[in-house]
Length: 143
Image (cartoon, rainbow, N blue to C red; front, top):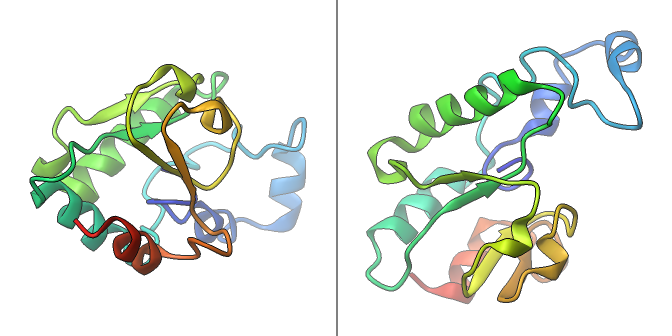
């Protein structure tokens, strides 16, 4: 979700640098309270998700990792999905720290962490030179 469907960087930018520095542990901002509460969607993400869901070609799931030490983030992610993706995302959210255990043809992720780099299907690295935005993903997969 983060960095693919959710513009978490935009949400982080709303906090002061001093606050971020005080919260940061082990080079992560996952401990920031309410970090996952209502960040904006990435440009084109909602439209792309809806196109994939409406397509007969793909069975779409949202695979995300939530910080272990921030249990509120798990619910905040679910609320975000309900708010921005609605009925098309009903029971399509999977929270896992081991993305490679999931089976599929494609995984759209911005990083290779949490098992994304070991996914057995094709990893489409969002934000890379090949897939810089949702238009490039849509053009590649053509839902």
